[in-house]
Amino acid sequence: MAGNTFGDFYRITTFGESHGVAVGGVIDGCPPGIAIDLAAVQHELNRRRPGQSAIVSQRREPDEVQFLSGIFEGRTTGAPIGFIVENKNQKPGDYEHLKDVYRPSHADYVYDKKYGLRDYRGGGRSSARETVSRVVAGAIARQAVPDIKINAFVSSVGDILLDKPYQELDFSLTDSNSVRCPDAATAARMEEYIKGIRKEGDTVGGTITCVLQNVPAGLGEPVFDKLHAELGKAMLSINAVKGFEYGSGFCGATMKGSEHNDVFNADGTTKTNLSGGIQGGISNGMDIYFRVAFKPVATIMREQDTINRAGGEVRLQGRGRHDPCVVPRAVPIVEAMAAIVLLDFYLKQQAYI
View 1 (cartoon, rainbow, N blue to C red):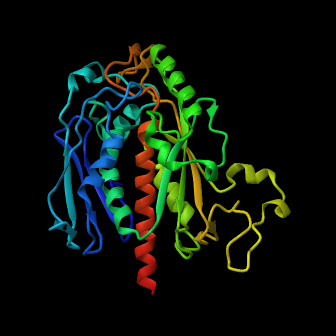
View 2: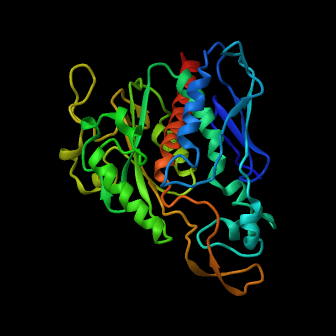
C-alpha cells in the first residue's frame, strides 16, 4: 500500500488500523532543538478522541501518545520521531457482519478491487482513526512554526450556517461547546439538530472554516507546489472531505475583476483579502482562510440495499459506534494538517535563504 507519507521537508508516515493493536507514525525532518510541550500534544489528541460528548462516537479511547524516539529531555533531536497510540477499546466483533458485505459510500468495495482483500474491522486503514497520527504530527508542527496562529471552527452543520465573518468571532470560544462553533446561539442550534439526526438513525454533513494568521509572505512555490494546492491536498486527504475552497472560493467566480482585485496599501498589505492570503501560489502576509466540506458519515443506523462479494443483493443496517456528524471532531484534524503544510513550506523557504 503506497501513499502513507505526507510532506517533503517535514514528513509524516502513518501506520495502523482502526481495530489493530495501535496506530502511530514516524515524523522525519523535524528540526533539532525544538522544545516540545507534551501536554499540548496530548491536548490536541483529547480534542479529536471519541466519546467526549453526546453527539460523537461513543468509542472510549484514552488516545495517550507514547513517543519512542526523536525527543530527548523535552527537545527534538533531529532524529525521526516515532510514536504510537494504542487502541484500548477495540470491538472487532461489531464488524463481523461486514466480512463479505460492502457498505454504501464506504471504501469497502474499492479496497477489495484494489488489494484483493480488506480489513473489515471498522474499515482498517480507511477508518478516520488513522487521523490520530496526523494530529500528533500537527501538534508538534505547531510548536515548530514560529508565531503562526491556526484556528479552525465548525461553520455549518446541514443547512445551519454561522453567518458571521471570522473577524467578528472569538476563537477562544470554539471549544466552549461540543460542536466547536465559536458562536453560542448557532452552536446550540447545531447541537440540537445533530441530536435529532442521531435519534433518526441518520447522519449529516457540515463545513469547517480555518484561519491562519501571522503567516509570513513568501511561503509556497509558484507552479505545481502552490501553497493553496498543498493545503487543498492536505484537507482532501482527510476522511469524508468532499470540497475545499480558499479566499473568495466559488463566490469569486461570480464577481468582476474590478470587484475582486485586492488593492495594495503602501506597506504591501491589501485593503481587502479576497485572495485569501495567497497570490500566485505564494503567501502574501495577509490572513489565509479556507473552508472544508465534509459529507454525512456513510454508516447510518437504518437498513439499506447493498451487495456482497458475490454480487448478491442484500439488506444492511449499520452497527457499532459512529459519529452522527464528523465535523466537531474534525476541527483539530484540519488544524493539524494546516500546521504540517505550513512547517513544510517554512523549512523549504529556510533552505532558500
